[in-house]
Amino acid sequence: MKKLVFASVMALASISLVSAPTLRAQDSITIKDPAEFNAYSQASTQSDPKAKAAGLESFLTTYPQSVVKKAVLDMLVDTYQGMGDADHALSAATRLLQVDPSNMKAIFLSVAIKKSQCQRAVDPKTGNLADPSPCDDAAALAQTGLKAAKPAGTSDDDWKKQTGATYPIFHSAIALDNALSKKDYAAAVSEYRTELMLFPPEQTTNGPGLVDTLNLAEAYVKLSPPDMVNGVWFYARAWNFAPAGFKPQIEKKLDYWYNKFHGGLDGLDAIKTQAQATVFPAGTMVITPADTPAQKIHKILANTPDLNTLALADKELVLAFGEKDDADKLWALLKDQPTPVPGIVIEATASVIKVAVTDDAKQSKVPDFIVNLKTTLADKDIPAAGAEYGLSSKGLAELDGTYDSYTQIPASDAVPATATTPAKDAMAQSVQIVLRDGTIIPEKKKPATPAHKPTPAHHVAH
Image 1 (tube, rainbow, N blue to C red):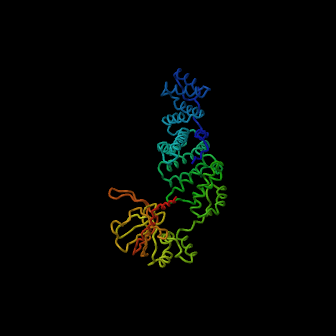
Image 2 (cartoon, rainbow, N blue to C red; image 1 turned 135 degrees about the vertical axis):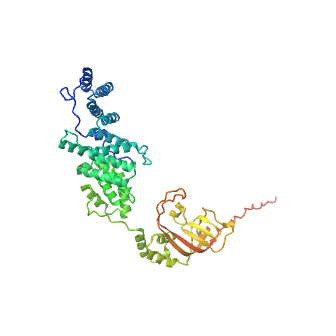
Image 3 (cartoon, one colour; image 1 turned 90 degrees about the vertical axis):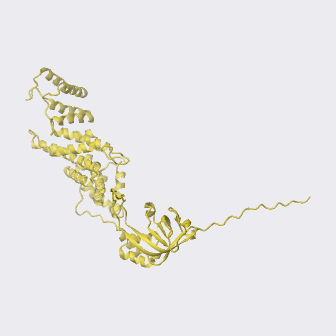
């Protein structure tokens, strides 16, 4: 999916910051060497940006320890930034930070460019980072910026303007690193929320504020478990103000997560309207959750007069997810009753056949029915894994058995491998149903087609 990007890095970095003053002949710093002074004056007064950048770089090469090195690097940052040359601007900012580690302009520009590099390092197919270092660098610089003290000689009003322009972007860079590099979505949520709180509400309807409204939604739904309510809110907020070309992409996710939580799309328009009016959801905002599987099953049972008419897979669903009273109600009807078991053999011995009946069981290759056979099979008759049973009425081999017992199996988390035990995948809640007195009805053999005999020739006598 295309990324939602509203501003280039250089446009972002062009936010006005109070820069170091340009050195003039009457300034307190004096260049004593006439040749150095002339070289500085010639480079700093160039009107053509490329010539100015080249002149300033040449000056630094010739006079690497000049007393005006900091001022020259500051000019270089501005020059490259004005040219839209992000790579050289970052180089100049990095060198400026070496001589002035708390320089807010250099920190901010470096964070903005590194953050852009971080975003470009994401593989669009996998969503993984090819190189996490730009993300980590941007976050580390952002932390430095948040801790930087107000420079001497900077007024409170100017410092307020600088921090107002830079702090939201610093929190954005830290959030991006948490999400992409560290996969710490809870930390990403915290940083994105802090960022959006620093923006005036109107600045969250476009530019970086809108981009990170969407990123906040993404972080919420990647939590474990997903925070679908907050995810829906910020998807709705982003959808309201996104350019027309991006709305369908956002709406698809908004619909998915709302439906997943609520069980339908009714009421979503009201959420969209509320999200348009305010950045954060009000405490009165409520999305009614969908029925749980157990609640859905209870309604199905209440509306099914004859539970024997349920399909085998539906009966299994009730036994797997139903509340104990509902599952026991169905089991009272099934217990000691015969049933065919159409499915795929997962494992078989001479006395037991384990079968996957539901689509989930077939896909995961986990048996949900265990049939204990009435008569031991000869080795040649033991079905191979992958063999399939159906209904004899359709001419297929049929496996029959009598309901004997069932066990609900709770969901389990994935378990990583250790030196002595293999890894285990996460398992959804399920049920294992045991049948006794199993029998196999062989596949009906199609009658052999009789061989065609040619009709005897009749010869006419002449």
